[in-house]
Length: 113
Length: 115
Image (cartoon, rainbow over all chains, first blue to last red):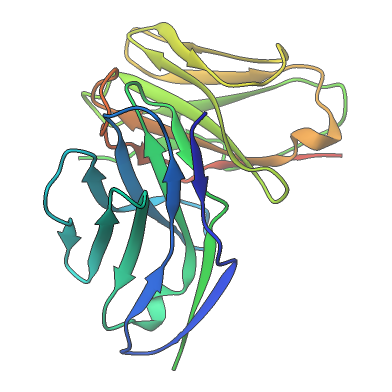
């Protein structure tokens, strides 16, 4: 069975500081994709970053980077230079072949001015 | 390019009624997936449609059904509504299906309240 675990229900970070949101996953499939989404209070899921299981390098997208440690089955999201607008729920997700996504329970991030 | 649109955005129904939610994917996308989000259960996969065929189905009762039209627009139907069906229903579109790493683009969701 596929499973995504996010152990941090809530996180606080000072504006302009970096923050790491943890995510571990469990799958026996060799081919899978890992995603991070941001969900503001409006409800829409916003795609942030993607990492493929065969990618050798960690993914980066602007202020977002994914710390992918395949042997440990972890895919932590690092947000650098936090901004007030980063306050939201963050979800780690995984898919295998097909479009069924498995989501973690999410981490609520609050950026403090 | 327009994003994924969902209608209606908010809906209030009473127990026993049925409801139909609509999702229009990004132009050119042929896969539409539906998710239910509740505080207790989190985000759960309902089903996926690709080229008018259901490709995957989550663990939901038969009261939840869907379909996809030739223009890729999709509808989700919930019959005999229960209080526990109150949730945010999210639709996501993707260009293709069947491959790990397909990015999904989500719509704003339909917030359903069952009284």
